Length: 257
Image (tube, rainbow, N blue to C red; front, side, top):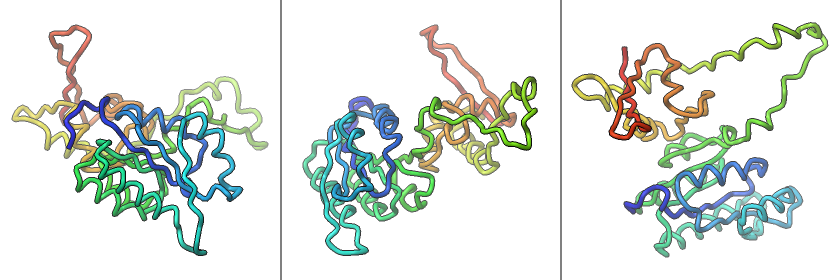
């Protein structure tokens, strides 16, 4: 696999228009930029169909190239085949270090596996309905729902039954996000696996191990932007911030109490 730093990695971004909504594509492209530079940006679909009409402005704004693929046979998804063929052509061109497969379709499971076998880094992006086989076939999987800008969230609607619930009650603090017990166990075992004899583990190592064990792990799934505040919110864990030669940088370690 290419040893360049993450920001230097070149990605081919291949999007399945039939299985992805266009509403948060801008957020998706910003997310991909965290992992490298998208050198290929292609989206596949039958653009003669009216249901894909909403993509037009999104493609122009993000410089994504539409690839026309007609549905030759009823009930068969020709888009998947075209996307897979292009992925293999790009792989053998040697011009990228990884792929970003954007789809909620499990048909791309084998493609993700094959690309990783070839030494490619594979990031999957799709909706929460994405089948688990495709998720675990990727190095990392990101849910589209967590990429939606917070400003677009609709305020909670008032119901006719509760018109008087305003003032102090309306200004109450938001409820603390609930973290599933299985996620806490996953973090605990990862800390144990990454820790030294003193039972402290470097948080960066823990984060990498979490993604290896569960590709769709992301603090944003549980209401946190970063791993540190997620772990701080769990009373079972202890955080230690250790100074470095650079006063602006601290190394964060964690252990189970």
